[in-house]
Amino acid sequence: MAKPMQASAQAAYDAALAADLQVNTQLSTWEMLWRTAQQVPDNAAIITGDTHISYRELAEQALRAAAALAELGVAKGSRVAFLFHPSPDWAALHYALGRLGAIGVPINTSYMAAELEHLFTLAQPELLITVDRFRDVDTAGRLSPMAARFNSIAETVVLPVDSDGWVVSSPERDRVFGPDGGAAMGPASPVRGDDPAYIIFTSGSTAAPKPALIAHRGMVGAATGLQHALGLVPEDRFVASNPVFHTGGIVWNLTMPHLVGMTSCLVGVYETGKVLREMERSKITVMGAFDTKLTMMRNAPEYHTVDRSTVRKCNVGATGSFLRSVLPDWNWETVAQVYGSTESGGLGSITPRYESDPKVRYDANGRPMPGMEFVIKDPDTGQRCAPDEPGEICFRGWGTFLEYVGMPEATAEAFDDEGFFHSGDYGFMDEVGNLYFRGRYKLMIKTGGENVSEREVEIFCEDSLDAVKFAIVVGVPDPLWGEAVVAFVELHEGATETSDDLVVACRGRIANFKIPKRFFVVGEEDWPLLDSGRPDRHELRARAADLMGVGDETTVVQDRH
Image (cartoon, rainbow, N blue to C red; front, side):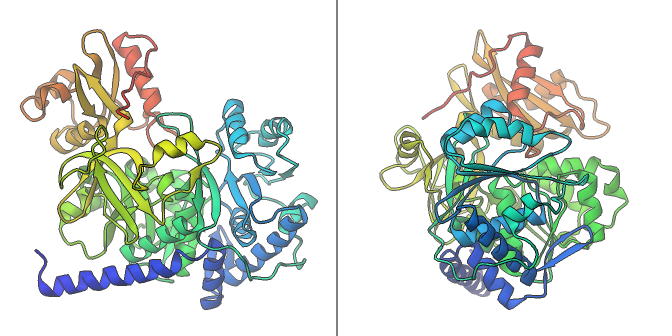
């Protein structure tokens, strides 16, 4: 039980966060930027290499772009698809769309023909904006023929870029962003927090990506939670490297720093060494990462040569054991675990700054923010679960997405009669309201009639097996058990344990049906990764099926819904 002074401090923190959320979730992303530009006009909003853009300049660029886009027919409710990497031009476009009330449709830079067709079919954009090349790939050649097939797309604008990937001066650029010194739209906007801002396609980890319609309030609210949890101030600098086609890129790269008046240091396309060098060059104070990215950093040569001591604040997604293993390498004063998804606007719960219990701070996924209500429900009966009883994580509130665009049946199925969104995530809440995410229900392995959470076994391996540094657990078809539990593991330096050794080490410490039938050791450079930097479970399932000699039947995954 909290002591009186501690309880008072917690109550004050919660009240201040609730008050800020009440105000900030009424704002559009543009109104948020404009408010900050009035407060700290000369602060650097963006740094990219040697380019510094102040809040005043960014606001002016956005208003010129808004005027130019209006000339192209973009208005409130228009859908604008675009392919960019993190860059100042993307930031100006983002806020211009917010000023107009247009809906952004960011395109995953790795999408190929079938995925692009899926995106255009559901999102139905009216304007397409793309850089002509990305990482030596002819993106214009990939996108333009596809866009020509869709009647919804009235026009495609291709922006030329230089060898570093930055948009260069051209008539095409002026059509989107307006010429320097050109006409600008006024700052007053009819767009508010409840209005839609983006169609973000989900990651598609368990099914085809769904187009989630996200409101401005979800992103600004998420940024507000990060501001309080990390104690962010205008003097902070954030190293921004998240892709622009996920809520993480929009919230972390732009909304979070620009809510506070701090600086977003955009590094462009993610490269581990480049991110680490930026920490030293720009004296970064705030970072965000999850286990895979932290591992990639630790394995990079720059990890041991650059000065990272200025980084004092970090929001992170990782198991408690993994997080504890990297803590000695960093100078963090504040670490916040999070739970979020596309459907929650990027963030639903976060570790409050006052949390003093290390076990809760590192092992839980924070607490729901004011205005975001979380419950755990039995996925079969729909009944609410008791504290510490696992079930499906469900939520409702200001961060919840509005709908799956063009998919009314999927939208209806995702919400229950109480208005809670059923996330498909497996976890529990303790008696004081801390949330513990422990995997996807769709990432449950059905083995011998028992359900096994992949994430639960991963956490066990990392927490309880001394040799294991990192683990990914998958299920593969098995003629006897239906599915077999299989683990891919990266071992700590010097560890030599075999699969049989690790199986033996599990016995008596976890239920027999949860023990992996096989362990496959993976080198630190050998993990197949998605664009987000997370391990590719689909590829690992295929690899496991091949290694286990069960062919290509790698999609047998149980869904309890």
